[in-house]
Amino acid sequence: MFAARQVFGAAQRRAFSVSAKQSSKVTVLGAAGGIGQPLSLLLKLNPRVSELSLYDIRGGPGVAADISHINTKSTVKGYDPTPSGLKEALTGADIVLIPAGVPRKPGMTRDDLFNTNASIVRDLAKAAAESSPDACILIISNPVNSTVPITAEVFKSMGVYNPKKLFGVTTLDVVRASRFISQLKGTDPANENITVVGGHSGATIVPLLSQSGYELKGNELDEYVRRVQFGGDEVVQAKGGAGSATLSMAMAGARFAESLLKAAQGQTGVIEPTFVDSPLYKESHGVTYFASNVELGPNGVEKIHPVGKITDYEQNLLDVCLGDLKKNIEKGEAFAKQNM
Ligand code: NAD
Ligand code: LMR
Picture 1 (cartoon, rainbow, N blue to C red):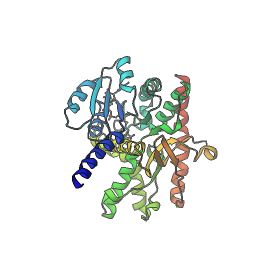
Picture 2 (cartoon, rainbow, N blue to C red):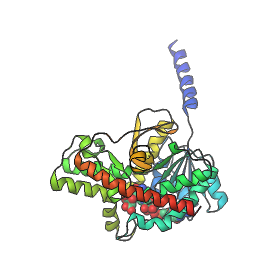
Picture 3 (cartoon, helix red, strand yellow):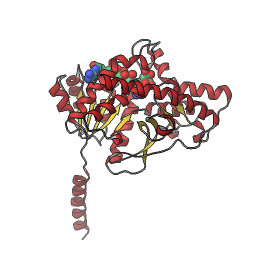
Picture 4 (cartoon, helix red, strand yellow):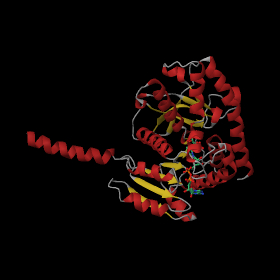
């Protein structure tokens, strides 16, 4: 009886592992770059990824060959920088991460990247709209406040826009906000999860420290907020012209992709901050995209959480954020409409 139950148990486990195996193809566009390489590495280590598809205008197949030797189950394929390579890389993707584009140098704002990155993102968005219209699209390329609206306009123009499946990746802001408070308070950063709302550049990044139960005052609060808002500049300056955050961004992008995969594979209560097509400030401020905590589900966005209770200090930050954000969004939309 015991033996029979054991045999039955093994068979059951096999059957379960077959039926529970929900394959997921994840594509990285810009896979040979500073973010793309470590991001692809982290995705290769993720057992929820079954197929990893790596595309870049240079070096995609090399990165793929290297990563493919890692002894995890997923298959890895690199694609040549041709229209058919891009099409193949995207076809059947569940998640498409886009870190393609140029990074900042000291003295530049993210908006200074607009002229170069807007058309890169537009072209990759067109390819994704054609070949993977149902995928979740994760935009990393800056300026995120504008590249997300550009992507949305491309998808709209091609009749395949699904607001639940387009995400600006703002996870790094939360990662930083959590790390920086842990340094001030002497806590374990892994246990911190500071809500950050708004967008992803300077004053549009609004950490809501009050919601975590911490209270900083005066200069200490100003300096904390400034460090979160300009954490990217800290890295750009430290790298001295060799680019911006790549490794911490790879971790943040991999975390966001992991959360989407968890939600797609049936886990409930998965919440990540992300910049999405959002109703929160649409009517009141004409701000059509906004980052707040978002519950993820099998179809992407499940529920957009409101900002919630905030202090007067945070409200002032939010007011400045909304003004800037509106301009960044409109700039992206105008570009897309004029340059389709
Ligand atoms: P990088 O220059 O090291 O890499 C970019 C890669 O994109 C290169 O390999 C390049 O060949 C590739 N590329 C360029 N055009 C392409 C195209 N049309 N198709 C496919 N690949 C293309 O830059 P990086 O440090 O990896 O940064 C990439 C982008 O991510 C930058 O715009 C940067 O500002 C942004 N970024 C965003 C965040 C965030 O929090 N969202 C964080 C860090 C960096
Ligand atoms: C970051 O926040 O590190 C990125 O957006 C890159 C940058 O230009 O700061």
